[in-house]
Length: 120
Image 1: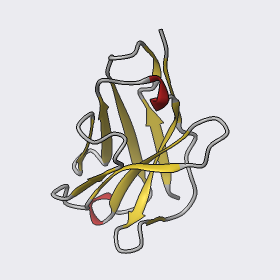
Image 2: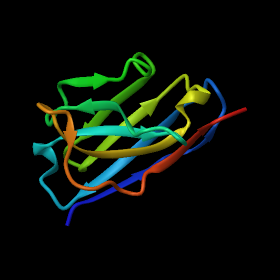
Image 3: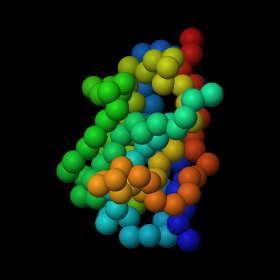
Image 4: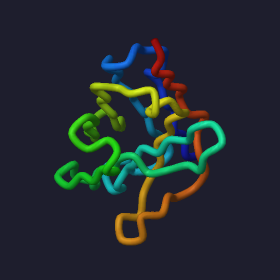
């Protein structure tokens, strides 16, 4: 059974930083590309960042380039999202999921996500 458990969200002031984690189980983690998505209130879920199975190739939404960094630890079955210089528009629920790199579509269902609120 595939499980994705996101953590690390919280309330942070503009300009601050957070590090999100996603612990994965139930599949061979090191063979899948992984992604972080986010969904803000009233908006569609959007791709924030993606990382290839080996961690060599990464991709970012234009809105987060230079501020967010995706990484993974295949030994720990965990993918991370380091978020720096946070802005109020980064406020959203953040989700991780497996990703088909060729189609940029996710596999399977979503976890519970982790809430990020950027506010003074």
